[in-house]
Length: 162
Image (tube, rainbow, N blue to C red):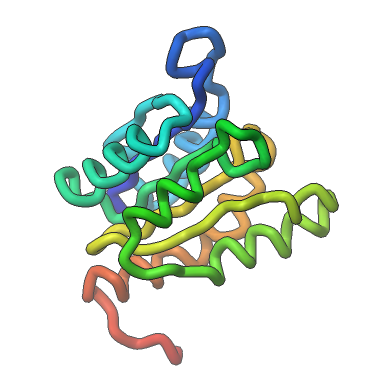
């Protein structure tokens, strides 16, 4: 099983003013696969809070995959990519590129996503959109490739050319 953390980034959600629909949708998709959601939390759109949460799930919980949702747009409060870039050690641009490319087939607004993906220690971090529809679509685009990448990251597999 791939140990996974789901972090919803929403000011209103963290204040109890909006029900998080995206986090549970992500969990539903993951539970049908080889992923085990071991951590779920809603936090505000604050760089320091996001950094602290990502460091916690990567360094203390040692999850294999950390999925954020929310905070990847153009709003002044959308700071998830900036926080993610401050904690990752390696950038993994292909995942974000693939999500945008596939999403562009559905809506031209996909080009407005500022999502980033990267590695901190032995954890792959992926920024997903905040909307349930967008998050689920993007997750489904990348889900088939993630286990192999995580296997290599964890040292469980070393072959890419199969």
